Image (cartoon, rainbow, N blue to C red; front, side, top):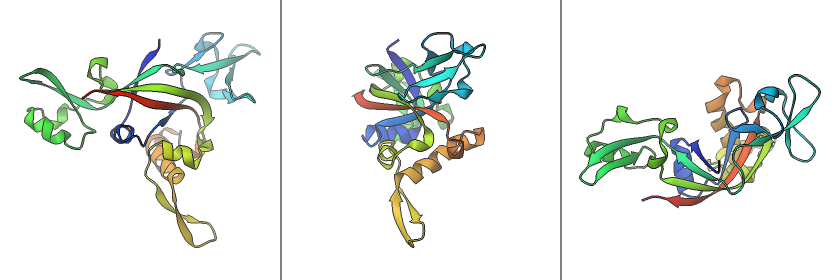
Length: 210
C-alpha cells in the first residue's frame, strides 16, 4: 500500500499549510510498523532498539532471533492528511469545512452546521481530505535525539528558555517541542523523560485542494 491516512491536529495542519512543518514524529507501534521477516505479533516491540546501522530491530518473543522492524510509510509513498472537519449540503452539492481554517466558524454558521458537529480527524474519509503529502524519508529515532533544527521543522513556535549559569534567555524550538509532546503523551507514560522510540517522517506538500 503506497497511500496512507495520517491524523494531524489543527496546529499541525496550519503549520503544514504554512510550510513551517515538514517533519512529524509518530510513536513506534503495531499500527504503523511491520516486521520484515515474520509476523509483528512474534516480536517484542517494547524491547525494540536501533542498531549501529540505524535500523530498528526487535527480539523474537519465542526465541533468540532478532527481527528488523519497518515503518508502513516509505520514501515515495503518499500521505493524505486526516483533520477535524464538518460537512454540509449547499447549492453546489456536498461541501467540507476544516476546523483548522481561521474562518471555519463563520463557514459552519453559514452552512447551518453547529459546532458540535465537528468530526475528529480519525473519522475523516479519503474523499474529504484536502492535503496530500509526499514522504521524503522515514527513520527510527529516540525522541530526545531531536535537534534544534529538526524541532523547527516540526513547526513549533520557539519559547524562551534560560541558559544555565549565564543569566540570559534564548529562543528554543526544542524546548517548545518538549512541552508540546508532554502535553499529548505524558499522561500516557510516553512523555519526554521516557524517551520513546519514534518514526521520524519527513514530507513535502504535494497538493492542497481548494
